[in-house]
Length: 265
Image 1 (spheres, rainbow, N blue to C red):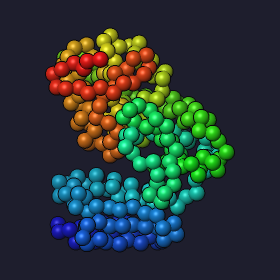
Image 2: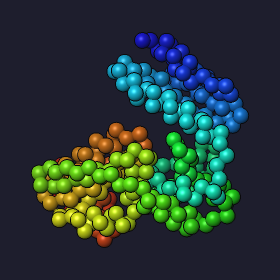
Image 3: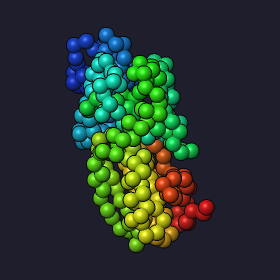
């Protein structure tokens, strides 16, 4: 299928009353905007067409659904008061923007040298990151917001899958609810994993939808985790960090793992 035919099919699927769709011929992108809010999303067509040609139809449908849900959520008025149970922390890379595209400052706290903690209001199929404006409107302090979000993330299920490679145990959490990586902030979970570990406990949060704990007992385990974290990082929708973390007394210390070598210090 050629690009223009594909473009027309995508435009047809994204057609909604109150939305405008503009095509950028030079960049081969579609800009979909809500007429009322003037907010929208930009969709790159060439990568999407490549997925279609590989018969990854579910991935194409998911991209279109994400755009549609995102625009619909932008049109909703969001408030913190009344949404106390729907506020969660989200982990992002330290390089993640601290402002929205329209210039509003996002609320965040430092987590590690590699990561930050942002805060979000869950809207069902999506969420919106909390800005200073939203926080001030609520009359809450940042400390209260952080405590509430951390309490809520502790209430989420923790569906782990376990695997063993060369005498090392790996625990994978993937609940697909947008807060998998956020569960690293649950100190009771981290403590349980430390108590359970026979060797050195190491964690990885390569992207938003992945959390890995590893009970490392030999050098091969470090090598496997390092390669695993890098692979997950490259495949994530919202990458966080490819660096694993040594876990000591609940604290996370980023560590660079070279192939076949155990990290020092």
